[in-house]
Length: 78
Image (cartoon, rainbow, N blue to C red; front, side, top):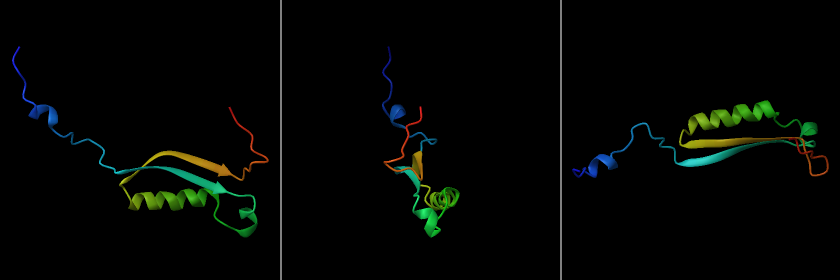
């Protein structure tokens, strides 16, 4: 069997993702925040989406949404 050049195996994949930072998005709306007029879940999604468009080096792995849950009323959904 003939030997193969190692240079062929090292060639970079042009399709490879060049993002340098993995992140998770955490969106939270506290019960107290509804009284102060802070951003809604949808508004926070828009703000984060615009930020991510300006920072293409960030790769979002997952998104977590806490819509007014607290440690006293949290219910696990399966």
